[in-house]
Image: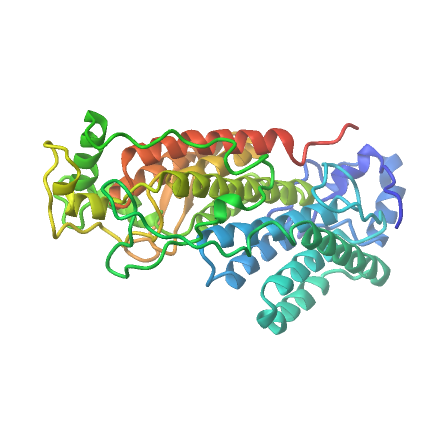
Length: 445
């Protein structure tokens, strides 16, 4: 294993890609090669020979998209783990070439390796380990990524470094508890979760709160407050709000509220990784910053799910479709049952508090704000897989605005109480801030 050699500061501005005199989309270096001091031109030539003069961040973006494609059948928390695994492996790989940020799992190093080859190979190996049935497709995608590296030696070194980084990451996460099967028996009493229509599916991932976090000390580190008492005025207010606004036939929910209720219904890992890619198109970053951004965000998002599921299965609070239909059992004279009440979209098979969407969104927001700042200077616009009508878009001026809309959508879609959203936002902020503060920190020059 080679020791990392500290490269000169001037080399950092060489992470550029010039096509027809313009930077490749997503490259994000602050200077072009033409702006380099004359004394650095010899270094540029050497850098070109090692295959790094045109290092775009596109390989990172590509493999984030490949992660989305590969993990399609996974539950939302497992998807978050997949995105974290892939993005962290890529981050560790490129920082094994030039150490700009602290790594998570790997100490493998080779300053002569191609960052593109290292990142692609690391992502590929993690995805093949997680989804072996998709190896043929993933192998083909790897060939495409590696074809961009023309220097044979740099490519070979990058492949070896990527393999080592992936192996180290897979080893560290091998016994993280994600494959432990936990049984769960619902408590058939007022206030407690039980399977919900129309599918009446069994509880999803009841042991996920025990999975080893990526940055937190445990899933219980920022556990939410207990649900309101069923007889309380707060519970009554939450009951009325979600009943009126979250109904499939609501007459008080606005057209805009209906729009974002549908829009944010998709799994959090999909939406927030897409928003990160949207931000990159506005405020490009080099390959090191891009790899770190996705790694930080997906670590925070994955820890958000772990923290949320810890709270969910501690409190085991019932969902709106249950407590509205069975309000005659809650002992609260200010709530009335509606046996036919139905939310705008189906309720996931997990307890109410905290809202996983709210937690994941505000956790992801912390990482994105760390890298980009909150306001990018122009609107971020994208679509979602659950947008109605299909292909329609929404825009936000800040990550905070997007996170708040995402959280509120869970009441508007009829599947969470306001307390679940408020507690989820608070939990997500704590999770995100903690992960950003303690993981993948910038190394001293």
